[in-house]
Image 1 (cartoon, rainbow, N blue to C red):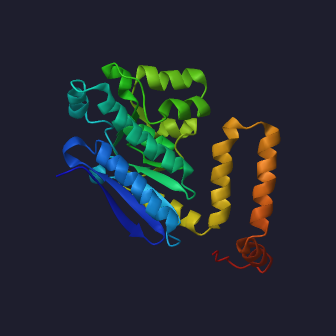
Image 2: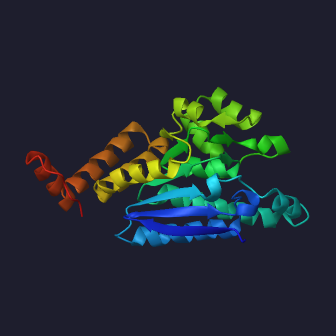
Image 3: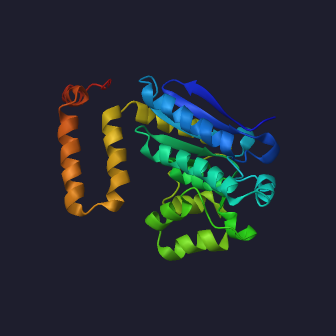
Length: 259
């Protein structure tokens, strides 16, 4: 069966499923391109308020296809450069996508599969899920933004351990480190992720988009500039119809239904 990215709808949530059963959902250029396209469609659809990325067959993703990587060693360097650019385009599209993206991880998330999960806004992982940035095991360095995310979120010593030692890490440890949001029973990561997505779907989309943009910009801003952006987003959202809905619903002790 060919490697593909399957798309299904669960209410207002788009579920993207990595499917490459022969190679444990290994990633590749076709999947990267499909991921960018799927997010473009989801961004323009008012019916979609969140996205969940998961893997087929009880595995999230083994990362890069080693057979393809070995073959690319015989090709000009531009071949692998273009492939990584495809992955990075997808990672950047996840980060800039104005709606929440949740990774639902069962089994292994290795290499670029781990990087892909780290690119998402939330990670839900089964208790027996295993994560590994195993690049250094085969004399490679990371891609997919793993060094950026870990460098931003962890002390240098911990980031160095995950990237250089390339050891298998449990979902529980990543939860303790603050990289995994929720740990589910085995086999229930997708259901838990969908429940989280539904709770996000019930919130005002414009407010979540502002929060995501503010979080994206914060590492590069001075406090002065971040405060200015927070002010501008707050005022804009206050004058959005959803603020009127939310404020009135709270005053009336009702559940708001946002546009």
